[in-house]
Image 1: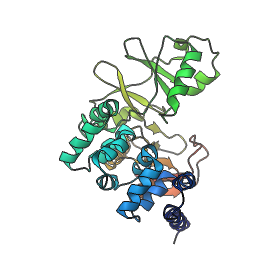
Image 2: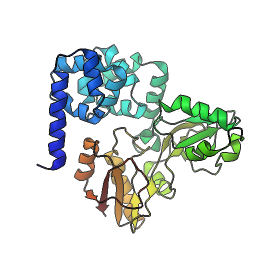
Image 3: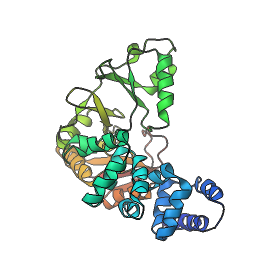
Length: 335
């Protein structure tokens, strides 16, 4: 048994002991705060239906949504709940995660659940669902921060802080004009070190690359890999921001492209890439002359690691050129 497998088994055992302890719900909730959502998601399969339903009640819809975003069986687990309870959890998921779950729900029940979701979340879900599988819009996230250009740095920072708790993609801030059209982007670091009364417009990169939602993924991959950006905004036909994706070339290894934990299938959250997108990226990398593909992840993301290793990626030592400081697992695939 590998050390990682042994560690996972130990964690699952600890989680089951906590969940079945019979302690006060607040104590259980506080104890589970010390565990990653992905580990709790793995433990769900070992619980009874009633134990799962009780656990969601203890944790609340927001934490339950985060946990189920990591589960391949989320649709089955939601089917155990009353429609409104299931809809409340979907509502608290990132829209791209909710779409992934809803794809596995029976069509009739899927429609009922979407109708029970609040209007804002429903719009995001419907938007992503409106694109066919081979269009970039189907792989984007709506988890990003957008601000207007005609404000000061101080006002922009206040806006970013107010939105940061709902968005984990904050390293690049999108900027729009008064009509809501994409104007450019700002690196969060530049915003932080700027003098607070500096006009925001002076920090905006107006030549920032963009994509349009109805472009095909295969066409976009070629364009995306030419930019070393954390994210690239996806625009609608009116040049308004509706999402973001990202992929970058990796200079740390010879003839190597990097697949990021995309905004193409965010971060999922699922912390992984769609199989279709993975294949497309590999094919495009080969066509472009790359000899290998590189990616970074975290040891907590066992489901994502399983996908990468199953897809042929091999773990390597941390490259000195890596820039994603929080990641602790590094993979390479020869093409």
